[in-house]
Amino acid sequence: MATVTSYGAAEVVTGSCHLLAIEHGPSILVDCGMFQGPEEERNYGRFGFDPSEISYLFITHAHLDHVGRIPKLVKEGFKGVIYATEATRDIAEIIMLDSAKIMKEDFETNFRKAQRRGNEDEVRAPLYDEDDVEATFDLVWEHPEYDSTVEVQEGLTVTFRDAGHILGAAFIEITYKEDGVERTIVFSGDIGNDNTMVMQNLQKCKHANYLYVESTYGDRNHKDVEASIVEFKRVVIDTLRDWGNVLIPSFAVERTQEILCILKEMHDRKELPQCKIFLDSPMATRATEVYNNYSHLLSKQCQDYKKRDGTVFDFENLIYTPDVKASRAINDVDSRAIIIAGSGMCTGGRIIHHFKNRLWNPKNAVIFVGYQAVGTLGRHIVDGARWVKIFHEDILIKASVYTINGFSAHADQDGIIKWISQMEDLYRVYLVHGEEDKQVILRSVINNALEKKAHIVEPEEVIYLG
Ligand code: ZN
Image (tube, rainbow, N blue to C red):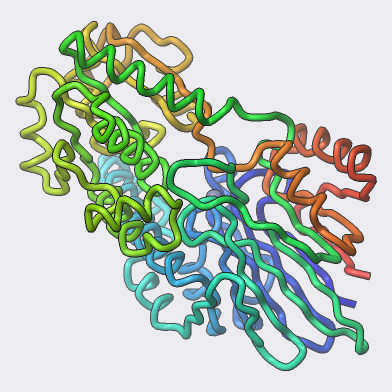
């Protein structure tokens, strides 16, 4: 009997890594992501399986918590074939290289500190380096198109379908034969929120016997995206009219492109006061390029922009500042600048410099457009801090702080339930990629509203698909 064991994203949100072992058949890994936040320590542990025995790796999408441990997997012996959409491959390369760079920088900083204390032997080496990332891309990659069923080997097919989450994201339908009987298991990866400006909507999944579904927001429904866009526009217009500047800490992939699209629409509709918009992030600049390259996978609005302008995101006010000199020159702009910079939770990156230069000014505004985890500078500010320490300097926050929550790239409870309700032949639902308290709520909705059996998967619990 086939089994699935979750070596990550079980009762937590991050570290997605599910092993499907087909009896007398191959072992398939679905995602191999990084643990983030309080779970981080687990990245350094053993996988719990032998990477060299895995035949195939299927990647749902390129977020760090779904791809971040792949170079470690390769370093520890994985030599199989990787299946991912072409766009996922391109975004994954940006994400993995950035991850290797951050780990290297952290290591060097910690090593210097430890040297002063004389305990440099205790500093842990990075999980992997750029060479391991390169080795990952030297393996054989297959790039299925959305909706085309690919035969992986005899008796095993896979279909990637648009998950509407980030560029290239897919939910994956795997069909295998066991004792002559065909069964289909679906891994949702992360499924998207409908009606975003950049992505297409989540596709229907018509047939599944077993479903592994994410449950990040299984306990709640989001605020309407439209209302969030209206709120965002209002803050931008009011701040610029008062000759202030707008700071937007943003994740490089998806959220940045969403924000650029809103600003471009404002420009088109002549809602935007005279201003300069800086995309001050090398990583977000690269990600935006990839989004532009795959514009046929984006929303109708984005495709129309591409047809009309030859580019999805560019317009006259938008300035990319990937190099450091151009980035520093932003400091000379006194007013009416919109600065989009990473990191999304303000744990590092150029947004910190802009905070230092502009948080003290009551004319300015900070707009948080993404989730801020506990313990991050972003969360500290969102929670109402009056003072923050930046580069050893205490800064009094006089800028207005706004949190706009409706831009989630994840489906909410209604979205998840609607998606599951469209599946025929569904025998059992397994909840992963969510915090346990939220999963308990989603489980009861699935049990009651859909009358399906749902199970919260525990770490390394072996699930028998029978
Ligand atoms: Zn994701």
